[in-house]
Image (cartoon, rainbow, N blue to C red; front, side):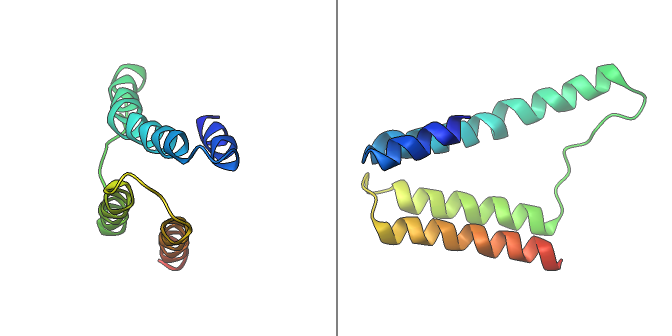
Length: 99
């Protein structure tokens, strides 16, 4: 739902708000929700979930963080940076599809 608000903000040319919503939501999921689910799995069942990443997943996380840092470094966004983000998304999705 938050990403839909980011899309609507971007359509209204409020790029700062759109980028803040997108990155903030992703960071919230990565830093809060995933560890809470791991802790909850220890309480709920005999086979707890583990937070273990394989090589592809770790490379995707690192690449995503590097590209997000590059895009937000100057405080402005251009169409080329948006295209760059979409290209990284397609590359990551395609690599998971063929792996």
